[in-house]
Length: 45
Image (tube, rainbow, N blue to C red; front, side, top):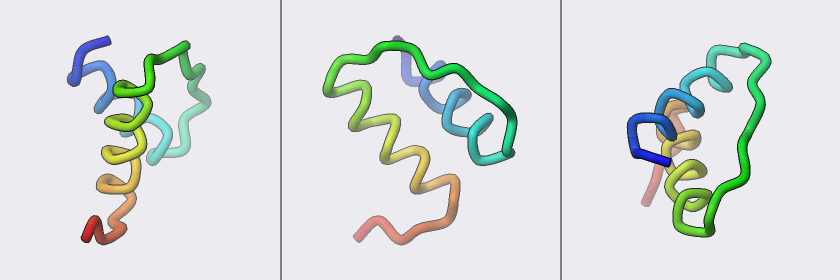
């Protein structure tokens, strides 16, 4: 899964759209969680 796909998936969830989350590797899941937090406005550090 590319970074672009991960960002689009996280963005869809933040916007409240019903979204199916595909199976991911650990590194993809970690990147997905980071983008989800970032797009929701949480501090990262």
